[in-house]
Image (cartoon, rainbow, N blue to C red; front, side):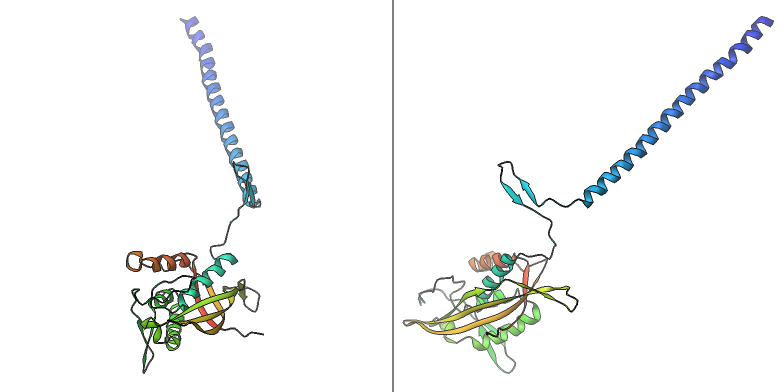
Length: 262
């Protein structure tokens, strides 16, 4: 009996030592894994930080071997080509006075058999004028306060013969200057550009062709917008398609004044 108790006393410490050893190994493994995880996170943060500081690539190569230029753009950025195109197309629809709808870059034959669009009435205070449907729809995309002012001035200069189909006035732009950013006194961009245009309003009369040329030189102020006005194609057909193509540039005319020619 004494020998058995002595044997148990000798073996018990060995058993406890074995359990402690296993626990120590588990703790050591856990600490190592935690350290490795923290180290991995730290390295990942450093790498991510380097990527964010790295200059964005401006040139990439496609699978065909062609090199193209890419970049990140400010939401308010519009390229000079986009701005010039928008101004030219919008002014064309605003200032081309015809009762035959959308028209195009070619002078119409003023065919009396063509279907005419009804004029749109404009309140002039004590009087009432009218503008063409094309001009009215195009003016809806202008800044609201400027749109009212523009319609009144346009109604005053639109000849009544336009609505009978006897006369047609078509804007021909000869020059559209690259947009110039408008800065404040601290040279910070104010969010608008000015675009100078030089052209003529060509007046045509049924049976006589071109009878007059009126200089049209303007400084147009435009700004970027997020939600351009899109017209209903089912209601206005080709005219809406043409106007929408210009409006998708995300720009808006907010002012216009005579350009002083030197």
